[in-house]
Amino acid sequence: MQSADLGSRERGLLWHRRAAPAADGSVLRVLRSVEGSHSRTVRFLHAAFDSTGEAFVAGDHQGHVYLLDLTRNSFRLVQRTGLACTALAFCLRRRSEFLVALSDYSIKCFDAETSELVSWMRGHNSAVSCISVHASGRLALTTSGDTAQLWDLDTFQRRRRLGLRNNDAVQKVFFLPMSNTIVSCFKDGSVFGWDGESLECRFQLPVPPTSARLAYRVFAATRDGRTLACGGRSGCVHVWALESRRLVSVLQMPPAVRAVRQLHYLSDAFDGGANQVLGVLAQDGVARFVHVGTTQLLFSLGSGSGSGDGALSSLVVCPAGRNVLGLGEDGAMTLYSVAALTHALKKPCCMH
Image 1 (cartoon, rainbow, N blue to C red):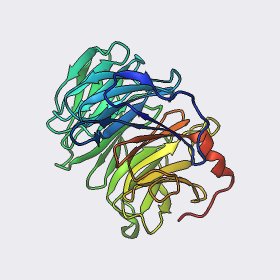
Image 2 (image 1 turned 30 degrees about the vertical axis):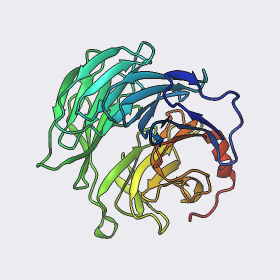
Image 3 (image 1 turned 90 degrees about the vertical axis):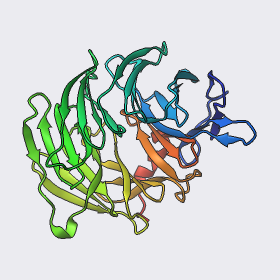
């Protein structure tokens, strides 16, 4: 695996000669070290792929936002915001534009090609933890602890402010993929679906039996929008069929998993959007990719998984399912090739 240290450079090459993925599927490790009286690594906090999966933006805790283009073999500093980012999105209708939520609770839109500020949006009273962009690229939902807001990305005006339900704190609000349905999740574990235009309630997931109940904190939907995976402070992941409102599967993670940090379905060009591979990032810094139908472990990334890198703090999966980006606890990013990883799909192993 090759390594690229961005350092203090504003632009450059990612690699001198692109090599084949390593045995663990890793393609490139990206870090940013700063020299001084004490050399240190500036930590990357968030990243987001564009719609092709061949480019992504990444923000560090000093407020620098970089564009990394795998096709052009280049990186470029596109913005110095001066503030740490709390969320990123890079799949807008105008493909060169991206959204970055900042620690002052504002959201800014920049053009990655010109580095110009396109718009500045305010309205949240706490940090934005999630930005969800509609399939059209024209609408965005931003979620903070107290509210969710719906934005028009053509005018950058706020369309609606989605308030609290019975004073319950908002966990996450997002668009179902390829759909006009908005899913809202609250910290009491309740999950609702709403019409994106009228905001009329389309469904509410029933409360699971007491023996299976857990407080949902993280979510992932299949590309066809028919299945929702939910996890939280437990070693279990619940899989719901949204059309029938039924809990169709409970995935039991290994004993080492006490809480689920993130969930991501891995897209496949041949499954018609009914994704079957679910990535589960746990509190131990390991991302386990599991086949939902067979519950078998296919491959793992992160500390103790044999992938060669350290513990992961977050995971980003490109929309096309070709690349996976792991953000490490050490502040570096590791890019993985899904094509190199999925050879394990032919020989699944038992989960451990």
